[in-house]
Amino acid sequence: MKKILLSTVLMFVFTILFTSNTLAQTKTKTLVALPKFVAGDIELIDKPITGDLMAAGKELKVVSNVNGDVYVAGGKVEVGGNIGGNLIVVGGEVKVLGKVAKNLIMAGGKVEVGEKAEIGGYVLAGGQEINLLGKFMGPVKLGAETLMVGQKSIINGNLEADVTKSEVATTSKIVGEKNIRIHEVKKPEIEKNQMKQIGYARKVVSFLSKLLVLLIFVKLFGNKIKQTDLKNSFWANIGLGLVVLMVAPFLIILSMITIVAMPLAMIGLVIYFLAIYLSSVVVSVIVGNYVFAKNKFKENVYLQGIVGLLIISLLGLIPVVGALTKLLVLLMGVGIIFKSLKMFSKKTA
Image 1: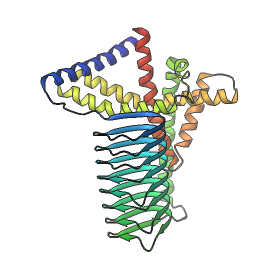
Image 2: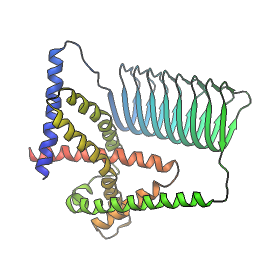
Image 3: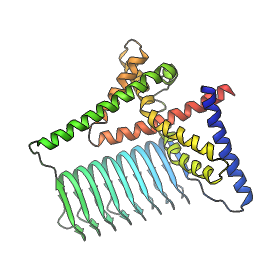
Image 4: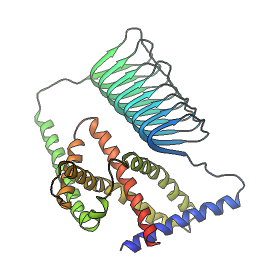
């Protein structure tokens, strides 16, 4: 079964490479410029980029201009250059200090758009603390625990916020409608309780389903997956996962266009979504192994996987932190899966 899966993946990759080379030979111009990929613990991007940028790391700082779109994920992220397209950024601490020609989507623990920043399109944001200090040409929609709109802030569109606490400076300028909803503690109603019970039931069923898949997965690959060094390869795996999630759909679509590679494209699509679903299962095994090793517990690969799944599931229930946890688990899990496939292909070659 493993050899069949490996052969399928290799055939899919070779077909894409062959198709790309054929298209390059038949046309003098490059059809699509691939993005620049950056992944590491501490990264400084200080050279201009003509296309798109995809970056992940513990600490990321972008000070150069990027003509295309920018996708960034990290612990501490600062974007100071001018972005010619869209900016999508996720991190524990996020600062946007430059100009963004199009739209801005951001999420994190503490999120700030600086005084000199200028956003040309709409803004979607989520975080524990959001500070809006710059100029916004389009509408702004966000959800946060606390919101602060600075004294020099200008919002030419509507401001829609769902927060616990807000502070809007009197000297700030909001051209559109201002709709800031403050969370209030209310007595639970019967309908709300019923909806919560349904939500809890769904989460329990989802957890049990993943638990069943986890036990089977641990039986087949548990001893190999737990060998991953969580501490030293954390950001590298996240960077690889980000690259795979962004590039794989593009390659699948490209292979579909050739028609001849349509069957392989469908197989690649199945593998792609399978990797997304198994990402939390893989990370559960690694997290459980890390916890057991840290506390010097007796090794039990099944129990380690269950403990890891519990930890990830509980973190996923926490507002804001849960969304960030799910994203990191997805990126890391996908990165580990494709890295394992690559290592397996080298051993069998």
